[in-house]
Length: 494
Length: 107
Image (cartoon, rainbow over all chains, first blue to last red; front, side, top):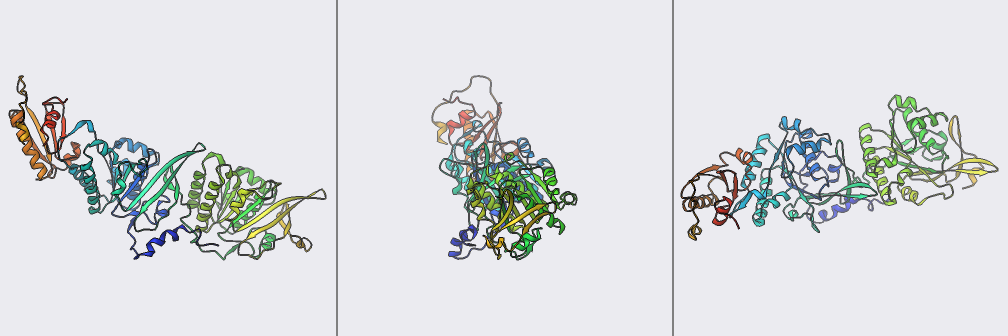
């Protein structure tokens, strides 16, 4: 496995390691799902972070969640200075993410200060400064002992004052002042044409700049987040998809996890003794990725079923992500070959997550799986089938999603079984080739017609780290389940 | 300061209007001093002293920054006569101050 190639973390570390080694900046965890992973622990503590993006890209939501999580999880009260929306509007807008700002405000964990800037009211008659804003902000910070501050958005100030020279000097002073106050601050700004922000605010904020973006592809909106700059820290350089959901923002790390996970030597039984025998090691490696491909009716789901049942027997939890059939259909079909899933569901060692592939965008599927895995902590995950997700996007997108999912599950020490439908004529499809390079074990199932009899076969195309036979073996599916036939004669063919 | 002497300003023939002007400052600064000096001069020359000047120091009363929506300093607020008018800066541009206070119509 090429460690170097697919480890962006290592790579981005290089320029830092080249010079004198920097002491890592203390960080303030955001508590936003996934963001702390891609920033290596959160935003620079006691510094100002700039979040820029076009209208509707989620700047306000992200900034608000930073404060809400700070108050809820880290005992850090926050002040939200809004130059645009009123406090009432903000309360309503973030209620969709499940945040009760009023309750936080009552407990003095959050203070929303709506600063109205209306140019029409103000005539400028000479030199001025923004000390009034400083005094107001200082009072707000002191009144609740705030450790976090959000200014949303500074563009409103540019609309409010005509003397831009004074304004710029005052903003510079404001950022210095925030630093002196030792609050961790987030400021938001509108995306500019050909520049990060319309008013060049990125010049003032040297510590951390995050760019948000949203675009519509195939009628599905996808939001992305990129860390443009993060001084003195290692951060992922990719564009990370993120979602705004009913429980907040969820950033989906792409490859930030890299290949740090330790390869497991532990072997778990596939649930089919004869298959375990076929696989040299006696089963699958724990936290490996298994692809089972084959045409319709070759028994792909059955193999997944056996594995889930075996995990259940060992008292280990499984998550079955069904994208084609309903839970009851799967339970019924498995029962016909002697795999009893219903008792496992009853004992909560098996959970189904049934979803239509087209119900959500790819990112949403990924985020949902993330969430269930984090919540349920399964040791086995089945995706039946990965092929049905292929219709969701380009091969590149689906592959990227699969990579992220595989990395994530490996890190969680989850063994993943994916089924993939292949065309009966073409043995392998291009899409599968892309995914197959990511998997550790690849089982290919087929139906062969010989002498008027349909024979099922199984071949182990790939099994990393195992001494496996590469024969095509006969497989039977009966009321007792799957059995792989090892006989001397078939061993000669390959 | 010399701007006041430039040209005669038409006096209002109607009954004397009492101006109540609030000057928001933050402590003694060069800007706040010059704003007060300029304001006094304008009152003397253009309002015939028919005005009352209140000075509000936000350092002593920081709450008012929020309650009165004051961002920039110095800020001059015309409380009377209504409607309320806001002017920011050290009031060195007399012309603008007069327009801003609606003592003189803008062009």
